[in-house]
Amino acid sequence: MRMGAALNKLKLYRKRFVPSETIYLKDDKILYQDEDKIITKWRVFRPKENFDHGMSCYYIRKGYKVSKFLNEKNQLVYFYCDIIDTEYNEEDNAYIFSDLLADVIVFENGFVKVVDLAELADCLDNGMISIKNVKDAIRRLDALLQTIYSNGFDALIQPLEIEE
Image (cartoon, rainbow, N blue to C red):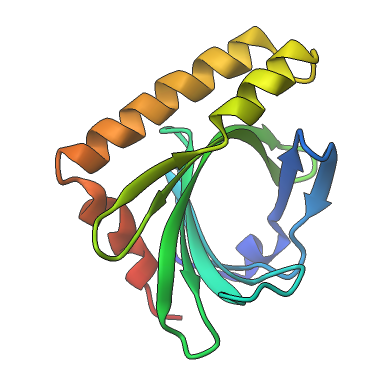
């Protein structure tokens, strides 16, 4: 389904455990949506040294978001993959994407770096995240890594080549 007038009303939220917050992504532009994925274009909330904008593809059923981080010259910095949990609120026509903390960074040269696993364990220790969320995060992280290691990453980033 291509972006149309009805999709302008769709709301996206990012929920985080650390810090505990839910942010309405009011400035994210939805480029595409179907039942499996949502593709957005965005600018960072807080200025960063290496990047200032990018695009994301939320893989709703797979439980992760793949983002292309770009610098001010529109050059690729890296791909950042968040493990997420997705809720849809039909009444508000809103998706709430909870960041399950475990992340994967994929550099242009193919180097893969898994980050924030200690943060996931710390949140479990502190009762900030449920055991179910941790199990989901680990399973989704494993599925994402298996896709990356079996040369399937190009298919995951292909939707980020969408033109407005």
